[in-house]
Length: 70
Image (cartoon, rainbow, N blue to C red; front, side, top):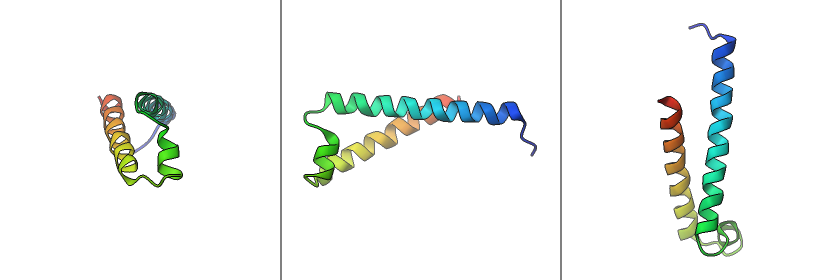
């Protein structure tokens, strides 16, 4: 399989776009939930919040991947 420059550039563009959408979604999640997610996870060692944040992260990643894949 031969990869061309346009294919590599489009892959990089979609990867960066996917990460930006993922970060924006995570920031919106942090704004919608009470308290600060990172403070709950890091300082208070709240496992339930960590599991919730991880599940949302996986869900956002699946949505972004499906949108990019078509």
